[in-house]
Structure formats: C-alpha cells, structure tokens
Image (tube, rainbow, N blue to C red):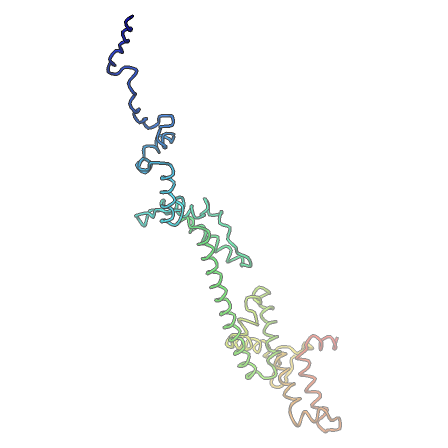
Length: 302
C-alpha cells in the first residue's frame, strides 16, 4: 500500500504581501482629476479656495444656496448697489448714477423738449451741463426737472398774460369814459405819433395793445404831446385857423364832430336843409372833417 503524498504547504502570508486586501485610497486633493475629485476642483484657483465654495459638499448644494440668497435679496447680485459711506463721495455716487444711465458727457442727455421755446431750450441745456458736472445724474432725473421747469414757466406766462389783459381792459374802460367818442381816433393818433417820432422799433416796444394800452398815465401823456403839437399849428390847407379855440388833432376833431352830430339842436339843423342854422352847422362839421382827415382835405384843395 503506497503512502499518500505530503500535502503542499502554503507559506504564511507576510505583511503587505500582494495577497492582502488594499486599503481605501486617500481623498484626492483639490484640483485633482478623476471621479473622486471634489466638485469644485475644476474651478479657477481664485474661486475654489473661497469659503463660500468649500462649505458646499456638491455643486447642487452651491447652486441651491445661490438661489436662496437671491430670493432673500429680491434681485440678482449684479443689481445690488453698495451705498457710499460719505455723502460727498462724488466718484462713488457718479458710478451709481452711470449704472442708472447717466451719459459720459452732458450732450449725451436726450431730453424731450417738444414745443419748448428757444429760451427754454437754452435754459435746460445749461441746466443739463450743471447737473452732469454735479452728478452726473441719470436722464430720468433731468427729464423730470425739465418738465417741472417748463410747466412752471408756462403757468407764469399764463398768469402774466391774464394780468396784462386785465390791466389793458381796465385802462381801456377808464380812457373810454374820459375821452368818449374820440377814444379810437386818439389811440390811432398816439400810435402814429410814436411811429413818427420814435420809429417802428419804438412802436413795437410801446405796443398800444399792451404797454401803452395798459397804462392810462402813458396814454394821457402822449395825448398831451398830440395836443401840444396841434396848438397854433397849420390846418389841413396849410393855413392857421381857429376852430373851437385853435387847431385840432384828428382825435379832437372827431370828438367835436361826434358831439355836434349828437347835439339835439345842431344835429337837427344838420339834417334839415330848411333849418336856419343848417349852413353854419354844415360848415362847422366840414372843418372838423378837414382836421380829421388832413391828407384828404389837402388833396381836395390841390
């Protein structure tokens, strides 16, 4: 009977032999590649080292935290403004205003000045220059200021026009009461006097419908000038005459003729050819008419 062969002896395993199970690998450092690298490993160096990045275990956590922060703030981070700590920090405030649309130069403001006068446009232009230098403030601010200014100047102009109209009306009422039927003719003669002695430019400055018309004192003064010119002056035919105490201005003649025609006695004689005073009244009226229309009278005598 043969003997069984001796079993093969298995050597005792030695420490760290290839047959021993390998331990778990160490975590890969930040920036390492591979499936085991942290989620932020591929970020730029200036981001991956930020505490706000490192505190999040996964990218999803970081994204969720950003969304939550934006919800708390109410706006995206690029819409947040850090207020300057010094009220006179022009540069810091200027940066804020430029973020709100302020232009780089004053001529960059494109304000709506539709219907504005040349004076208003010039004023607003100078205003925008000053506000850009002080700010530069955003366009919406300047547009609101320009709108307010134009509204205020318009109200002031309307109020002035209403006041001038009231003064003119009051002056007209006063002078019509004082001059009676000669008012219109006298006012016309005053206008001619101003033009003859002062020229068209003065006539425009002393507009009968505004300055002269709204100043009874000025109108009375100019009427006195007319009266002085007529004292002892030539008649329509170039000769001196005594009509009602001396030569007459057209306005005086008009008033005298109107009074004659409205007189109950002379008016009746004027209309009745058989009246004993008819011829004398007609002659008197014709003299008044000659002073009222000197050019026509002179042409008739030529």
